[in-house]
Image (tube, rainbow, N blue to C red; front, side):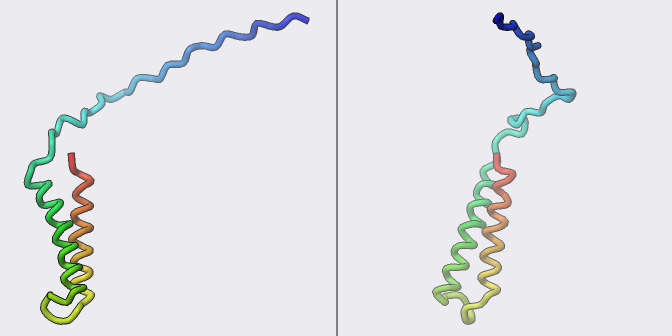
Length: 84
């Protein structure tokens, strides 16, 4: 029995974007002070938590120190979202 040739499929190409794509490199690299503050906040948060754990901060160990250390670490990590 003969085999049918089948249909030829049209080559599909993606449609071009309707807006001009923005380049990521337009802003340039992050300034040095931004990177220093970002890592500084993370390090400060870790230091606060460790000093609270050891008991070297004024007063007894306190949850306020823990929360402020975690907040500093969180702000530092949030700053990484805008790091270029």
